[in-house]
Image 1 (cartoon, one colour):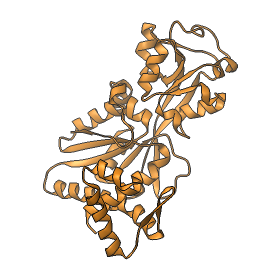
Image 2: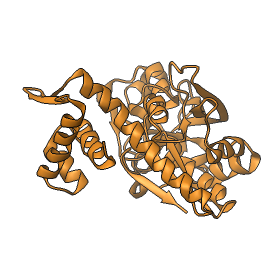
Image 3: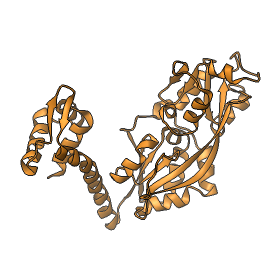
Image 4: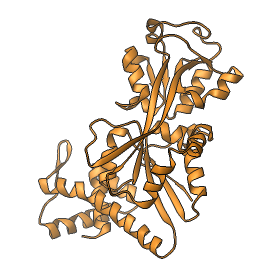
Length: 317
């Protein structure tokens, strides 16, 4: 089994077709099929067959699919560990929820990397429900965001920052400057960032508490884009209070008051228990310090153009 073969098979599993896997890898369909065929011969298993629903995986194919991402992640980790031993760059891979990645990660990463010239930081966005999988597959070294549900003893989860989410509208919105009721909030158009699609976290918790109908929820590419629409009085947005302080002071946003207009949230670090790579352990210790908290709350937020889905990676060095 070679990394090239595993990469081809992993792409087929993830994308559901040889053609899409070839497009993503930048090779021909024949090259992908050839690599998969070599795996089939070596392992003595068909791995998958076409079906009316796409691809049907054999039990062996499912087992290989679960291992492929882990093996590739370990290969990347080994490359960086060898480079580290040679005195070159170290790599820290952070998986973060969309809210943390947009609102707090830039300031944290800028400060953290300024302390170590030999450290590169790779940031990818994941829903909290996928934190455990990403850590076990060695896709990331540390995950940051709301506490996922059902964590096992194999993971260590530590809270480091509590924050307050508040409901805001534009100055021309009909509810601006009034004390609102739950019924009024439920009837509004809610302008939301990607975190609203998660089953955990402050935003989804508030929407569930208010019982906001799905048809009244509009999810944007970024939280900044949602807040921008709120400034135009297109609806109600919910944002961390520290992220909209300047807008509230300037009057471009107005904070709503009344039941259901604020909710507490908390961010946590999640790592594999007992096997934290050195940079991840350093970050877990550093992230709760006053300097780090200040950097997260005062750092420049990521604009809508900086947000990408989970397959995108941003590299700081």
